[in-house]
Length: 534
Image (cartoon, rainbow, N blue to C red):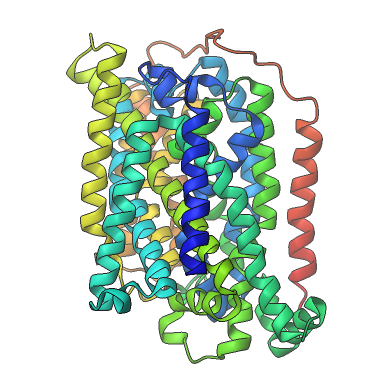
């Protein structure tokens, strides 16, 4: 009863508070619905960015991987800080100066409308094929496991997961459809800090239990039980036999991983849209750099519990690693706290889900519908189209979600491998748009097509003995070569000139560069210290 009460209390508070904060917001306009009226502050941006990124595929998937493979998977998190620094100091000032609403909008200015449309379609497909279904499924696993929905309703576990997927998907769609970006951002911020608190309480309660009332003693016991689990530098093969089954070899941090991180944190619409909705460049930079701080801390929530799970369960759950985190939560949290935790889990699912829906709706409405279907569309019509797109994509994602079960290397690894199909080709086009002025529209499209085909051929068809992140790095270089070769035959006709839109203040935050260097230094220190553990 306490579990249900705390769940309903926190969920209700988030809904009521967010609705009250939106009472004066004009959601009928383009900027009001898709960018929160360009009024978001640094703290709101950081909270929303964190929760848009961190969802159940991290809580379940990364803790499952850490349980089995140790802390090597931490690289996905701490190297994000470097990408966020680059985003804050280089990309965001340019995005805001141009007054962008979507990233594909930049590609229209830099290349042409066809390049914009292709990237827009790929973004929407990537949401439906990869992110949305996996978020829904991992969330359903967690909620079904903790609440025992199948047992309560007298149905099978598979039916319980299906039911949970449908309920969560419908609630997430309602948030995205009726509240726009600002509703998403406010719910994200509250749930984001709730996730940090509840997520940190899981390892704290577990270590308290292990250390008989002393958290430090508990951590020492967990460390002594398996010190190798804390080493962040993997010795797995990245080339040759066994490389395809490796989780995250250390070498890949210097090839494809940095390209992936740059794309996700500085170019991916569902993330960058929060910064595009900032009230000023100063607040946007604060948002990205505060997110960098949170990303360095977040392994305490999405990696450490998995290692603690190895202390409790040994290797008994190696064949079902994605069940480790739910089992740990049930074991260590008191009933009154469990309801609050599930409410936060629900918030994490809803955040990533409705953020992706809002971004997909933004892209379709502004970059496809207004450009190709109805150039004279009014703002109200664009908002209505966005709501319909959100509803349709939500339904498709709910149907697809249960089919991502039983990923052999874990759900988080599956998500990253699927993302590679889309992220690297799109990243190459955007990076070429900024750094290679001689790349033409024809070159950009050729590189995009080549990149899509290359990754599918190498990783999924030929299955070469290379870690998939290395394939990303090779693909990035080859994409750029193809772009330049084609551009030599079809050169740029009109040089791109960046124009200041004057929509908001682009005065930078005076501490941005200092904090950026601090975050980079901390990332290096983490690898120096934890990489020497035997």
